[in-house]
Length: 367
Image (cartoon, rainbow, N blue to C red):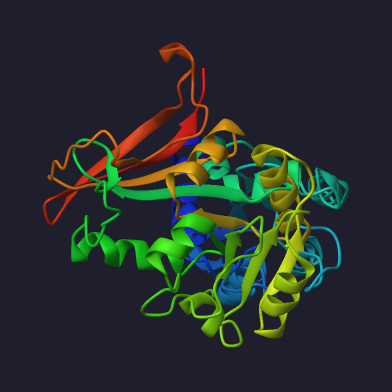
């Protein structure tokens, strides 16, 4: 097979892998294509957490045609027992002769072991076609495995002059109906949605996806003093959709008990500064194997997350409105950068016109 053909087949495998977004986490998204005599004879992708892996699905689709074929997969085949048996065993049993993988799996129980097992059995193993694209697709998974923290997406809607609300706090609605539909789609694939106590108090949000997506996000409020109101939409619906109040040591025992009695969970953050407390929360979410978390504001929370270097992706909806006002709320507060050269950048940002709003999204990098 030539390199161009391998890249075409891997591109198809990546298309398949992306179909699992929102359904497979904390597992990675994986796609697989089996090719014999230059023709695709089987395809598969990991469809849901705990379900069959991509290689198994593709082998089942190929049937006897898998014998002597080439198998293209976006991530190193697993070689350990987890929710399902090792994919390496299925590959060997199917009689595949060549395995082409886009990238190595950083998960400690795999991390090259799958390749070694296949090579020891006499299979040809090649690694690397479209490795960059495959790594980008599974960047949230890779961050969770390597750093123990979830992938953080910051979302906001602002006016053309960068305001989240007027000087009186009015913000409904800055963005268009079409923009808000996109936000609900994003919410529907998140493990958690994070807001500050001010946003919870002023906006009284539900933080749900409407209509429902493949996941139901844990709704988290950074509420150091545990003052979230019993009458808020979050507390009133906590028994139906989970709510976590992340509190500090200054929170009164009475208020923690009050929230817990209403159906909320409380988590005691460690540290004195906002950054230390945020990081202790993210470490806890990592321990819970949460892969994607949406930061919905407000400005102080956005600023804390940027200051901590924990914003991985941005989704900004810019309305063609100008409201002005020195006391109107800006999109990102916190300490911020002291020099333009140290500012966060969006790498290869995507820009779209959404019913009059400008939707800018991209992954962050910092010089």
